[in-house]
Amino acid sequence: MKRLVLLLALAACGRAEPPQPQAFRDTAVPIYSNATFDPARLSGNWRQVGHFGAGCAPGGVSFDRGVMAARLCLNGQEKRIGGPFVTMGPGRFLPPGEVEPWWILWVDVGERSMAIGTPSGSFGLLLDREGPIPQDRLVAAREVLDWNGYDLGRFRSY
Image (tube, rainbow, N blue to C red; front, side, top):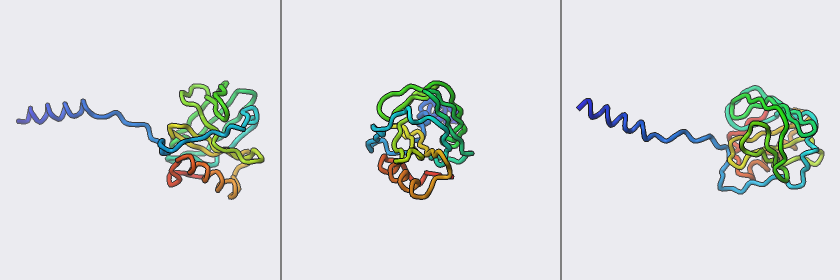
């Protein structure tokens, strides 16, 4: 009997589903990138002022003529990215070493604050050139993230 229980337990382990990546947005909701934003205007330094998931120290990203250097908190993990990025379409780019394009969901009129996400919802973040982000732009960014299906209950701002 013990042998049968052990065999059934081992068989059940073999059928376990692999863990699914965590998503911070409802992927049934359409997501839109900012079609009017020119990635050439990314140039400069941006501070991370918000993200989804577990906490870690906020980071930042620097863009300069098609090259980026970043240390960001994405889903509770510090991530470093560096090298040339590829423009994938309006408001979309592929950072070096990434497999999914990052979509620029929103940029304020003065190009001081920006929300970035992915269609899979694997992460979402908020950047600001000045940091900390003023309340009016934080409210606007949260509205755009919500409209794109992100779960604002899991959003952290710094």
